[in-house]
Amino acid sequence: MALSVFDLFKVGIGPSSSHTVGPMRAARNFAHDLHRRGLLPQLDRLAIQLYGSLAETGAGHRTDMGIMLGLMGEAPDTVDPAAIPAKMQKVHTSGQLAVCGRHAIGFRPDRVFSARIRPMPEHPNGMRFMAFDAQGQSLLDERYVSIGGGFIRALDSMDTDESVPEHAPMPYPFATGNELMEQSRRHGLSIAGLMMANEATLRPAAEVRRGVLQIARVMDEAIDRGCGLQAPVSDDILPGGLKVRRRAPALYRQLLHTPRKRDDVMFAMDWVNLYAMAVNEENAASGRVVTAPTNGASGLLPAVLRYYRRFIAGWSEDGVVDFLLTAAAIGFLYKKNASISGAEVGCQGEVGVACSMAAAGLAAVLGGTVEQVENAAEIGMEHNLGLTCDPVGGLVQIPCIERNAMGANKAINASRLALHGNGQHHVSLDNVIETMRQTGADMKSQYKETSRGGLAVNVVEC
Image (cartoon, rainbow, N blue to C red; front, top):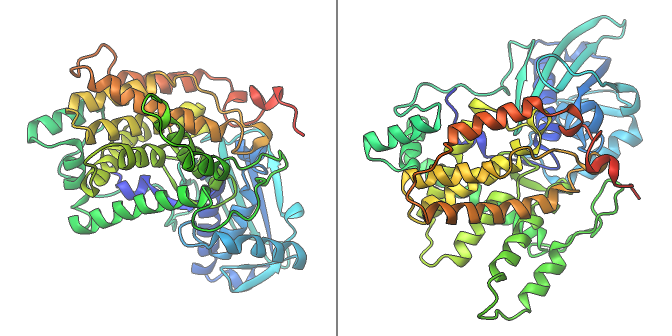
């Protein structure tokens, strides 16, 4: 599997890459299949079945919203988040939805969607889309699974343009952490340099650089919006019914007017907490974020990257590019050898992977050797092993928002621990990735994004 950095870091909307963005992409592909096959004029009715984790937590993760937007032809990276409420309201009041924006059909969400708690054999996040004509005859029947990070896999469609991409072989392939280090050592390249050489086979290096810096800008903008800098937040209560209040705007104002004390070693930590929570509050409000590698963990890398830019003397745009390219290389290893899906391996596959990626990226831009970077990534995951995904009310709010802040600071510490060492250590990154995979397989389903265990059942919803 040869991935691009732009496959891993995708611009989308909240609150969930696997439960919102993935279903949105699947629905969009299904709608396009209907159009490509000339079936839209015959379309009279749709039926949509959600399986497993999508059935259990889809409402809190706004899976219905994602699917409806996808059926309209909207894409996660281009849809205007500010226009979404009006689009949803129009469907609910009119009882109609324009498939691909051109063919209106009757659409009552309470009648169209149905839940199947038993998951599909292929993955805990399953969907089935069924289209019928006016006589009730089947026009098209397709199944998809949302496999984490906004990636989907089509189980039936041969026309899909939304599945996991497969790129041509790259000059410096790697499938394990050991192979990544060996390639870097053999060719005298940093991990970021190796990644850039691989990316340059898909598009010019200058275009890669611009694209990576654009990803960094979207991350920064999510922080600023979450802090209330670009525009006042419209409502300080996050949607979903838990009545969780946005904390980032008030914390930003507080920190802005708090003079830095020379002996306050926690000053930077307060800002890192702010950055991470600001992004994840935006995500919870269905704002625009970058899957890094998922929406549930979307605040962690932006927070550590902003830490690098604000608190590290001599930061540069080259450093920003190196940070994200290095982080992406680590993310590829988890995607290939384990999982980045909370429904498959718990939150260790989301916040844990993001922590590992951010630790590696920071170690790299602070001058770490290839061995120290690998060590930082290993430390970042080792101390997230077994982390469950138990969102209260099925919402990406509790404990997700604070969990990103904790993970960001853990990533910084993992980087520092690695840089104080010489790169030699007992547990390899490959060891810890395999351990994470095994731990996820052993984890009971109630701790894997079903809201049937952990905090989800021990916290009373108000």
